[in-house]
Length: 391
Image (tube, rainbow, N blue to C red; front, side, top):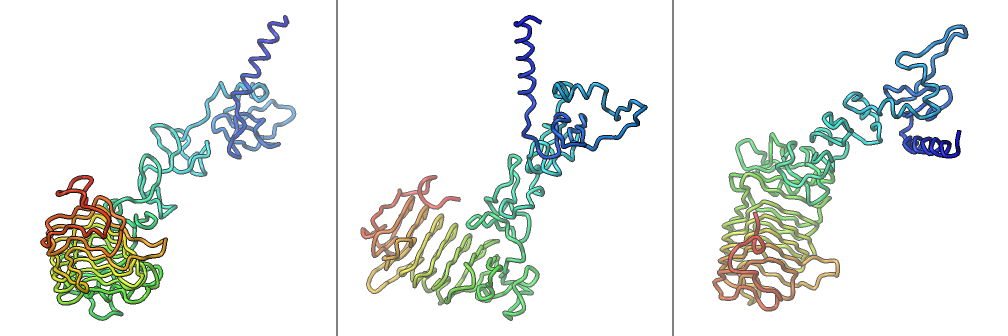
């Protein structure tokens, strides 16, 4: 062989070896060289299997394996003769982690293993229950959750809430008036306060359902766990002469709840408690909408309308009164995407600066939309995609 021919042949050998990667999942193979001693590579499944013994006097060839395989194992020509199997032809390749190490199920059209095809494939991790683009992810909206109360806990870890972690409140026929006898889907509590009082570690979601009006509620002492309150079916607190919602301790998250038509203040947060509100409506409460006094607060996408006039030691207000804001450095004092409209005195009154963004304040009867001490101004005079409460 001439030196030039030898060089070409050597290059072809190198190229063939380069196309035979060794980073295979344990138990899989391209050639018998990839298997442990005593095992042979099955070219149909690309799995290492025990060699069949042969009688010394008889040439024996395993089914599906031609006599050239011994040579193929040395020259890597199996790779060219038979491509690696796909899960389209070998569905079980995905059952133990996949031929290529991918998890999950077989996407038959592409012949590859993927994490999921439907939400039902996303049962391993409860914080990623939704299948999108063949990947499991946290839920983003209540409509995605088809189990339990139909609540997405996106403010926590993105799991879909279950009945086991839920306390139900609904003022309707068959509801329970005794604190020890209700709170389930079948027998909800009649009174909102009974639902709040039933919170324990591992069962701290309170779902309040309309359409009939619900009673006021208070968190007076630190609960066993952070409380989540979700309103459904037009849930409305109609508190009469009492404060509609009062949070004096602990952490409370409130979403999709209406507090309306009381003859007192609609919502009060005080004494270092932490109140988070989203997509709520606070309307027509005669002594003011939301009063925050030395508490942490994060209020977003909420409408505050037709409240007041309120009086706080001579400070007139209607929509929001935010006072004693000297919170720790880690404290929250933020409002965003609010619609504060047509309240019966100052729209938003503050004792100091607050963190505000996209807050619409308009139609305040007292002639002042936002007090100067709040250190921000209304984002406009009408709701837009960047100003005021969003859908």
